[in-house]
Image (cartoon, rainbow, N blue to C red):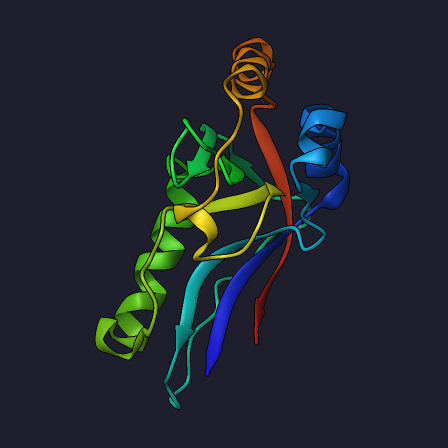
Length: 158
C-alpha cells in the first residue's frame, strides 16, 4: 500500500504548535506532532504510474484556520486546515483521477497538518477535555494570528 503526502517546512508550523501547547494540555496527554505533512492521498493500492505534481522551491499554501477532531468540544487532534488552497485541491483531484477512487482504502479528509494530538484513533469515545482547559484553548484560537501561507518542501510517495 502507498500514500502520498506533502511535506511542510517544520519551521513554519512548529512555532504554532509550541504556541498552543501549555502545561494543562501536556497533563492531558497532548503531544506536538513530529511528522509535519499534509496527507494528499491516504493509503491506496495501485501499481500504475502516477504523475506527481512538481512543487517549486518554498511554494506557499493557503492556511484556512484550525480544524479539530472529533470536534471543538473535545479536540483530541488540533490541525491547521488547508481546505481552501486551490493548488492542493487541484493536485489531489488529478492524483485521485489517476489512481481511481475505488483503489483508495481510507476516507479522504480535508487537507490539514496535525499540530497537537492526544490519544489514538478510537480513543475519541472516551476522551474528554475539562471545560476550563477547553475554554482557555478556544480563547487562544480566537486570539491567534494565522500566517497567511505555509511553505511546502516536497511531495512524497511511500
